[in-house]
Length: 50
Image (cartoon, rainbow, N blue to C red; front, side, top):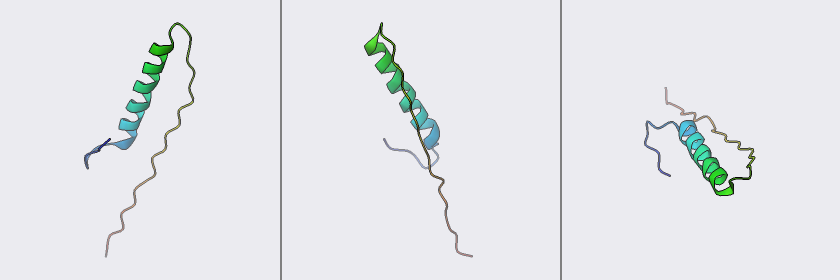
């Protein structure tokens, strides 16, 4: 996975998790699939010389 400088990591990771869960549900059909997906994005702090 390669993000461009203007990409939003949270949105990208949310989509990856959602798509993966959808694929798992399709594969397990007609059984149900429950998942606890937790994603964390640490804040990026850039220090600037003053």
